[in-house]
Image 1 (tube, helix red, strand yellow):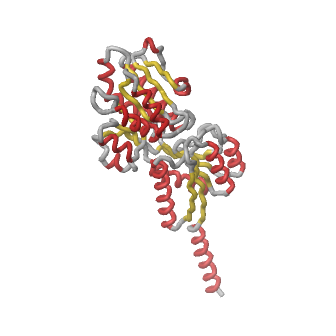
Image 2 (cartoon, rainbow, N blue to C red):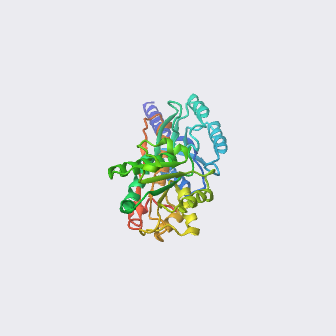
Image 3 (cartoon, rainbow, N blue to C red):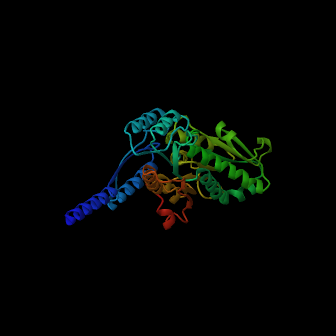
Amino acid sequence: MKKLVALVLALVMVLGLTAAFADDYHFEIVSKGFQSTYWQAVLKGATEEVEKINAEGKDKITMNFVGPDSESDVAQQVQQFTSALNAAPAAIGFAAVDQNAFNDLLKEALEKKIPIIGFDSGVPGAPEGAVYANASTNNYVAGTVAAEGMWEKIVARIEAAPGTVRIGEVNQDATGESVTQRGLGFIDKIIELAAAKGWKVAVIGNEFYVNGVKGEKAAEADAKIIIEAKVPAQSTVELCANEASVLLNEDDLISVFGSNQVAAEGVVAADKNLFKCGTGDDTVIAVGFDSGATLKAAIREGVMYGAVTQSPVGIGKVTIDLLLASAKGEPVADTDTGCAFYTLENIDTPEIADNLYD
């Protein structure tokens, strides 16, 4: 009898341990889109992390990763997020196209006690308690990194210029947190760097960026530098190229920043007809953001001076880790996945090359 009891207890322990190492979790992940290879890199990171966790055998994860056809398509993303909620997942990963369009749905997730993990742009302004944590680059800081990388290349030209010089900025939109924070971080840092030289800066163009600046702005008549922010009607390379063409045709333009992959590719596309960009002192210094075959080729060919890379694969992996922890009821916190400025000089170094994608 004692042997039988011992055997039963042993089986209970084994079965208990087996159950502890075989929890099932389904995650719905709603990204901002699939139009750029950036999102494919995020998907790659998420997929690799799911496979790694499943291989370890402690937990079993399934994942459904979706995104709208365009990063301008708010209605499609609303439908996708609604479907994600209806799937009753263990947690949802979310990068909002328009941070103001999801409050009701996020309240519903909160009521259903479904954890939300933001990634990339996250969900700023979400109802309190709905978003447990974010996996993303600090986009404002990333914008300042782009400004510092550009400034080193253009400061001598500004100093030598007899009159006003212009710096252009192409942003694919004025709604997504990631893009808007990069654009504002870039402008604020240029104002700060200019102030250290005793120069005033005027900011013109898109009202969101003009009004969102923290630094002190000057009137155009008093400025040494004019920053002109452009936003297309829709988030496409072609329309970003149209805005970039307007900037490249300004006689006093010395540099231009494309604040994400779509905008940066728009700058490159515009220059194919205008031949204004380069790395010499008589060219427009173009700086981009993210990676992709077009941007990497532009830097290698000397059309674009440099760009800021995030770690999209890392964002995907961290998102899965945060989703799993939140689903288990473990504490989670915002995680900055970092960024770096790269040019032809360092594009092939391990710390940069590992974060680039096609």
